[in-house]
Image (cartoon, rainbow, N blue to C red; front, side, top):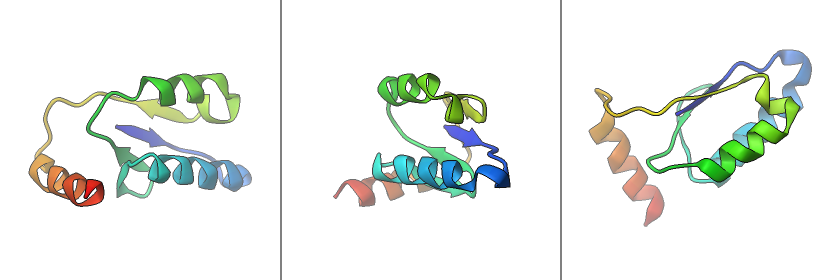
Amino acid sequence: MISFDIPNEIEEVRNLLRKILLKGGFLQIQKSVYIYPHEIKELLDFLQKHKEFKKYVIYSEISFSTNSDKWLKEFREILK
């Protein structure tokens, strides 16, 4: 899971991050919370190298969620 809190003053950075995540196959579950069902080491490396993202992005690994069945179904639809 990736979440972020990017200030309005740098809205273009926030919009760029959203585009990157959506193009990468992430599923948006809240305005600034995205999930992906696989390891994302390359993306994390990229985000850590760019101070515009590093300061505002939080990465978490989740082993259980109450909505996981719903999200897995949505990922299957995306991957078709």
